[in-house]
Amino acid sequence: MSPSSSPSDDPFAFLTLTGPVPRLTSSRAWVAAVLEAEAALAAAQADEGVVPPAAADAIAAACDVERVDVAAIVEEAALGGNLVIPLLPRLRALVGDEHAGAVHLGATSQDIVDAATALVVHRCGDAVAAVLGDSARIVAGLAADRGDAPMIARTLGQHAVPTTFATVTDRWSDGLAEAAAALTTASRSPVGLGGPSGDGRSFGAAHHAVVERFAARLGLPATPVARHGQRSGTAAVAGAWGLAASVIAKIGLDVVLLAQDDVGEVAEAAPGAGGSSSMPHKRNPVAAISARAAAMQAPGLVATLLHAAGSGELERAAGAWHAEWPALNGLLRATGSAAQWLHTSLGRLAVDPARMAANLSRSQEHR
Image (cartoon, rainbow, N blue to C red; front, top):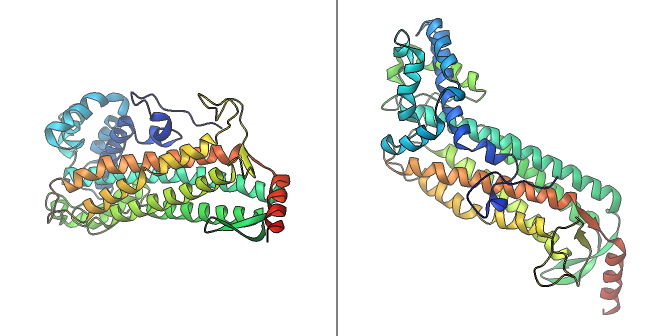
């Protein structure tokens, strides 16, 4: 399947807005995640008798992204500094006066934004891990068909000793498995509820029980200590998504090098793909190239997230927390797009055992 770009006014969206992640990180997806967190909070409090069940039902009915103006909420977020603040008056109006007091009860914006972030990351992690898993299955097919093909190994840029194509596919398979596992693990960030000062006192005696029910309703682990001022989860997510990007970039580079004209041991075989504006004879491995280009966006975004994670002032950061959101969205999109492009490259990869044998023979002749 060839990647398809999401609608965007970015002329380079084909590189970093492809695959399943753009839909999962859109304005609509983020506002929907905020609404889901608000509904889960009310339901958890109803479970513990903090709010009436009728209030939780009314809030759940109102927490439908179809019932709010996403564009207006995103625009007005600039006035309060996050998506929750412009959403709350709309949500209370939808719920009605009888149950408006149960909306966002005890919570602060960071409780809801952090929970929404965990949901977005979790969904993106599952989606990209699935793409990497499909890529691993493609690699297994290449290994079954061509793994025993003899070829020359290359170390430090030079011909080394004879090996087989299985050496390459084993390396790819191992990296893809590690990347998928890292995303799956780190993309299940624990969620908590801290309230205005992060100590949970605004939730009263039911705090810990509400946190457990809140997390369970979101399908995520719970943490008894809210992570407002302790951002290890952000650092863990950055590391996992950066690891995945590095694995993808390495495999893409292998494809690019093996597809060089004077090597020619693999090629991307896809009608109409990889052409040149000035050299009609060329067939560039454009999907592998695009995978590398997308993955190369990741290190700077990882660095921003690590810096933000360690730069928060006391109970709530003034800027560092906010800096996480665009960097995280960019990292999810860049790594997700890189994974999709690599999947495309591997899916169209043609392996040439005859060329491998010829290169191996020439190498041995010159020893």
